[in-house]
Image 1: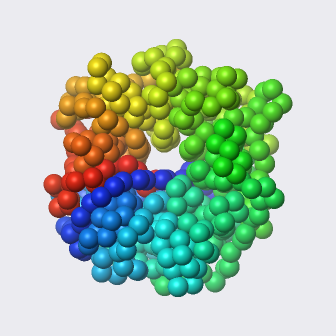
Image 2: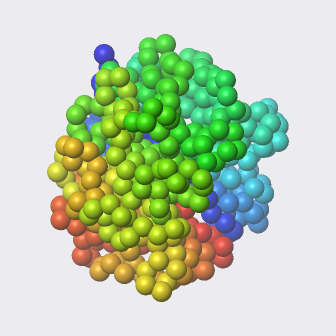
Amino acid sequence: MTARPRSRRGRFAVATGLALLAGALAVPAAPVSAAPAAAERPRDDFNGDGYADLAVAAPTATVGGETGAGYVAVVYGTKNGLDATERQVFSQSTAGVPGSPETDDAFGSALTTADLDRDGYADLVVGVGSEDTADGGEESGLVEVLWGGAKGLSGGAVLATGKPYDWLGRQGRLTVGDIDGDGAEDLVTVENQFNLRVLKGPFARDGSTAHGEQIVTDEFDSRYLDLATGDVNGDGVTDVAGAQIDGDEFDARRVVYWLGTEQGLTPYTTVQGGDGYRLKGGENLDIGDIDRDGYDDIVVGRAVGGYDSDLDTPAAKGGRVTWIPGGPKGPDGVKAEHLNQDSPGVPGSAEAGDGFGTDVRIADVNGDGFPDVATGLPGENLGSVADAGAVVVLPGTERGLTGTGARVVTQNTPDVPGTPEKSDAFGRAVHLADADHDGLADLAAGAPGENGDAGSVWYFRSAPATVVSPNATTTFGNTLLGTTATGARLGTGFAD
């Protein structure tokens, strides 16, 4: 049996119109402070200094005059948390990054992290979902990697291309995990929108792998909105979970999972609810052991309402978050618990369009040993300010996820810079990682509508009693990155 895998997920980011300086900015040097051994390094530590780094994508930004070419910004962690002076900006105009910026390529349409070449440094995997490729044709899509190293990310290689209109590496259809238990990270994406495509690691520096790939077919016309990895049955091999719909029938959302084995992934299983029918799913998910029972759980965000299924879906109003506990037989939908803003302890009240559950991330924010869940509410109104947005952190306990003790962060929260404005969409994307290596996961939040769709990112250093510590917030936007603000919508998505 191999060591128990870490949770991992791919993520969707959307942004509009940005002019980018060519090349990388302010390449950081690794801090000289003490760092943990390589085996203990965070999965998103690109420069190997022991501190988690933050990658945020703008896949529809303008680069070199090409609208929608896309870019990714990286800010590095230190003993004092994220340091916005230690940053890089990447696009297909950056030296060493494969390809060139073209209209609507969508560089950064999905992001995930892993040490693909097993050199001790995390690498950044980037989806270019609308890339036209010579091998695949129009809108085939592309997945490439930026290699980690002692001075941060540099260089890159192509990992995979799709077929015509595959949109490979697009909209959450990208994650990484050791799904065959051989100790090497495998890349999981989606082919033809409904088949899983697994590229088996480890990878060489040219992006190739000698271990081939696996196609896991779907007999139905399914679509995948998000993917995540973790060990849902506790056997020590990484499994994959997906947020799935029937074709283009968005009301038929469900949760499925594929068990990992030494031979690769098994066919998927649909999570069943207590009524004997498929448990109603959502648009995004993450995996982690919320109750610390040794089995990873699935947390699903269902933010989009207004469908007929709302009538018989618990806690559907305003969006919901569902906790599905793992177990020796896999996820147990019969024991699923649903939370929304009308649940006891959850700040606010459930209102149509709030978007509770827009993004979900799992990590231990308060240091009690139980992973917590951060979720965004970009449609939350703050007084008379419509769609200003918010983030709620839901505590994990030995009994699972709870609203008791939940905490909310908005631009009205003390020590949070900025002022709520209409359509800021604060919380459109959220992220949890320990950027200062103090044992507490720190929160990052994006507000792509900030300052008339220019967009901004906030980072908060956590403490046991608070998500937002005094004098411990970093915020950055286009001015710091040296990018054009008009229509940039910075902060629409993060890498895991």
